[in-house]
Image (cartoon, rainbow over all chains, first blue to last red; front, side, top):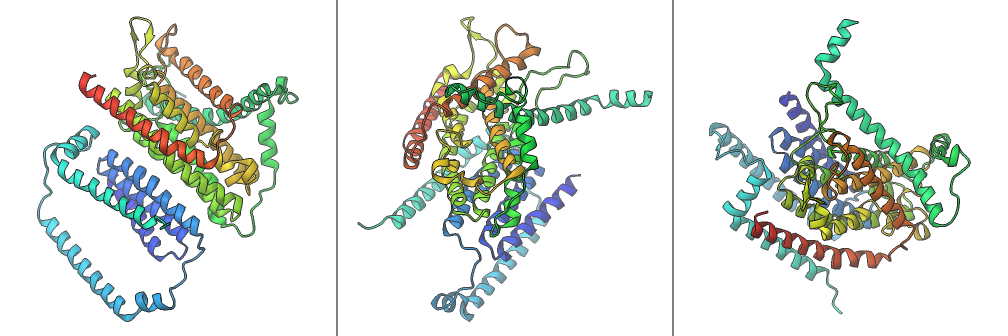
Length: 170
Length: 350
């Protein structure tokens, strides 16, 4: 039963993610990304992690994607035009394309290496199953408190950066 | 004949659960119709008019007449609208509204007067992260409104959709923080668990409802809840004086009705959750446990009356006032409330 769930959800996630990239209409791209997040959230449930699933929906599908949608609607571009002029030469030229291709090959190699490595070593079982919200809280604020704090500083920095970028000089 | 009886007896828990789900589904639909009637009656009462009085005694069959009228209407679609998203939007809205109620409990565990061998809880499903699930589904509801605004390809709809997304993001934070304070107090994320924490009395007569220890949280929850359901005085997505009807300007017939049904069901859900989280759910004096759902209905009715009463009493805010109130007053208040609650829970070892 879990196998069927996994394959259906995995298919939905992969198809939706492909759609995000292949879709020319930015509105549909955003919506397909939400579908893909929904599929991921379902996969978390099959992994017995309902808290992560719910948080995935609340944070990514619920809050961040609304902002994306907001920006797409504000710009209201019906379809993405291929770039032209200076930007086309800068981004669509032979050089950047080759660079992108090399990066893609490197990423592919890394993924293959990681997956083959993973298959041979069993996953660390750890102490208990950190699925309940209390256990996640203890892990986050006690065991990984430093990483958590550093992440929040990172988010704060990006917020300050956004404010500086958005500020109008008067 | 015996085989059917045996089948029902063997699978009675599953059948009871299915009947319950069907019952909740119908109840929500009927509640939307009832809300239409009471909205119009209370509006009339507030404005010293009669309200609907022709269809049935005191106009009680008015919602049915409204529904028949809406079904008979022509389904219109603007020529430049995005067909798929235009029809998807009301479906999303209604689906999210129905789905949100799936984790809301509305009565104690019961065997239906000994009909069942094991008691079942009066709710669709009791998940241990119910509050998070509820929050997740509510945050999906905004897409229906935003997509309706965008897919209609009309300026009023677009502005309504934009306003709604901005409003929902702004108020969702305060909403979530008032929920978090309750979760801390109860030490549980299951709505049933939270309600059961509120059973009993202090000093023998004050009910142990969280509204008495979280009055600020209750205020924040209700304010943000009104903003989340796009009701007056926060009904900017559909401000009729400025935006014709906002995001559903271009909708007609049943797709229009779906938006309205979703709005009323969302009001019922917010009231039900408020009753569960702050007003002790089905716990109350005088009535035995198995009749607790009567208390629950009374609490929901009171909160819904409050909703409608507020709509016909308070004028709409200005848009900048809405944003200022949400970010500069409500959110800091919610953060302080959360911190104080956390400190008290830690210090007093609640």
